Amino acid sequence: MEDSIVLKEHEEVVNRKLGLLLQTGCLLMECSADTTRIMRTLKRTIAFLGLRNENLHLYVNYDILMVNYHDDTHSFTKFQHCKRHIIDMAVISEMSRLSWSCIKENLSLDAYAERLYQLGKKKNRYTPWEVSIGSGFACGGFCVQFGCDWTSFFYASIAAILGFRLKMFLAKKGTNAYAGIGISAFVATMLAWLFTFLSVGPVAHAVPAFLHSATPWHPLLACALFIVPGVPLINFVSDMLDGHIQTGITRALNTLIMVGAMSFGIACAIKICGIDNFVTDLPITPHHNYFEYAIAAAISAMGFSMIYNTPRRLLPVIAVGGIIAVCCRNFVNLGASNGNIGLDQGVIIGSLTGSMLVSLIITRAQHWFHTPHQCISIPSVIPMVPGVLMYRALFAFIEMTGVIGQVTVAMNNLIKASLVILCIALGVALPHIFVHRLLESKRKQRLYDLLCERHRINKEQKSQEK
Image (tube, rainbow, N blue to C red; front, side, top):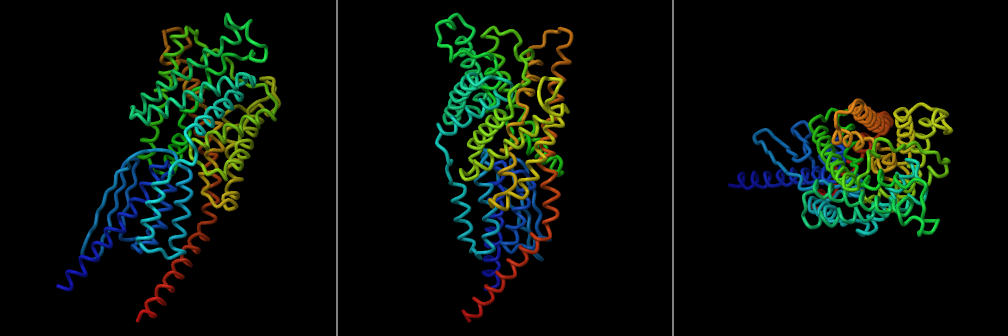
């Protein structure tokens, strides 16, 4: 009888530990942590829970996590489904901190479960309008990177603010996510088109001169870029490089559908507006000075950070990271061939250089600000994501009429966008991978020391109880 009671208690404890492990992994996956980050955090959680690593098998997928644990006589298996997928850098950062502090503070299972519950309940650090305004100005910053003037910057920003606010409203009402993307892209593009009348329309002569823009069509390129899924794109490449093929492919397909929905909404708006193929003909090579590039990059980086619910204390850091990444990219990319100052090596090499430089700096900065590398590096490189090239490629396929050269234009944009995304992800990942490997022995030693200290404290407490 006593043996059965002890056995039952053992089963309940093991099941609870496995449940907490799955909750930890699902929370990270739902907040868009890359799979390597999830596995790294879960290994520390396994050590905290006192589970034997050699007896535990963990399966991490985009929608479901599974764990199996066995001892000499029993096998326990649990599943947990990921209920949603958002981007929340604050939760990723705090979850990483919790995976260390739970061992250091010798938390009980109840205390750990409570902290995990509170993390899952945390609301957005920004109000809906703050996020909308941040995303709008981020799109305006993108517009400057494409060569628009500062008047068009505000037109693109206003259209994006209202489009993003509509997207949030539709999501709150339970609208299909992809339908919401298409509708908000359509509305944002229509609003940007209406702003062109202030510069080139029949009412332009009645509008004050300061409202005139020399680049009235550029806002149509950037007003819907708040939709471009930069974090899933980078996570997709990172997962594929780290060998998490299935999760990476799922992220890639989800990203493709999102960009497709955005392209469809923009295409519908352009058809209604009667604009003739501006997406392929409108030049996007900028001719600003580097001070303007820096301002636009900082605005875009901070704006997207607000969408990703990044802690406010990190916004200035990410702004500096965005400036470094974009200015380095532009200096390597632009040059005499397009009337700019730079090395003239092209956008692909430029993107690799910019992302690698900022990632290398952040491998050190993450220890200063006590936050994971991903929470600073990804928002910093988001202003380099080739959103326009992506939807230009899809738009070209949608608009294809059989004219010679259309396939070439579409494939050129598609291949260039794919290579830029690959280079951005490589640039972010490679310095972190090498530095992490150099520090891995120190991390293992730190974890071992914390576990030894925890064991010593528990032993002392038991001896005092006796």
